[in-house]
Image 1: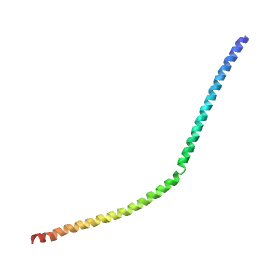
Image 2: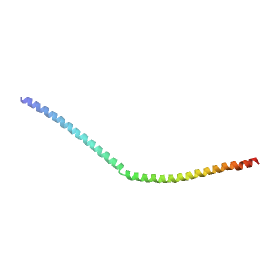
Image 3: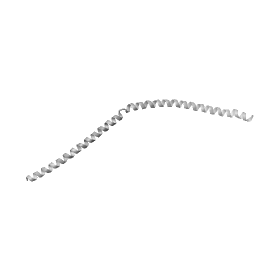
Image 4: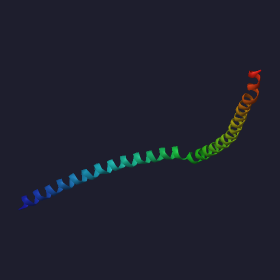
Length: 104
């Protein structure tokens, strides 16, 4: 009878020892994961912290470029109109003055 109790207690002790060992391993793994997550959080914070200022600066630069582009579009339109007027003048010149000079 005593032998049976000793065997059962030994088996229970071995099972609990195995469970304790597994819990200890799980604790180590969770600690490593927590350390990695903390490191990732620090890195992402260091990268993302200056982002709002950089975004604001980029927005200002884009605004300035759009204003410059708008001014250039106006100038381009004016150049196109001048070229159109010159071409129209050339056509008028050819119709009225070139015919008279060729026929003479």
